[in-house]
Figure 1 (spheres, one colour):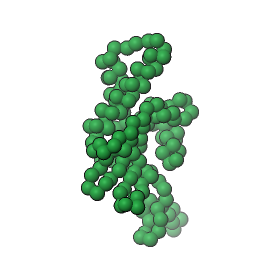
Figure 2 (cartoon, helix red, strand yellow):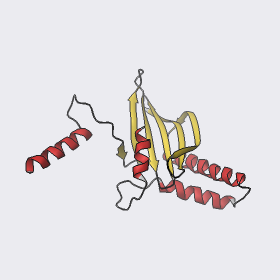
Figure 3 (cartoon, rainbow, N blue to C red):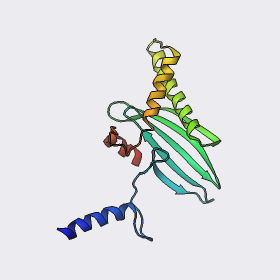
Figure 4 (spheres, rainbow, N blue to C red):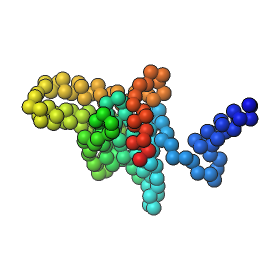
Length: 167
């Protein structure tokens, strides 16, 4: 019994952190400092590194595409997805050129994108809402995406989100 437990644990951790020379299984990694999953990392022929960062809550998914050029970190794009009940739908996307990545910038842009999405929906429904209320709703939803995955009360649609992250 002890050898079976040892083998299961060794195989599990070898998938996450294999010994040198072996390839690692493609598993999104949680980055606690940035409060997002890091996936799709690669290095270009010029030596620049790129990755996709994904953070989410029960309502939206925010995807950042980040580039590390020499000693600078740039944001290449931000995408906001919403749940339609069965899958994720892209609702807003912004591309950037030579914009330094900062958490404040990402939050502000994400809040603006969510607010714009709400305004568009309200407009199609010929309805309105005070601007302050829209801004507060957008801010609360984006703040939900910055909750730590390691918190014991983290409640998400993880089973629906992980397949989309891995694509």
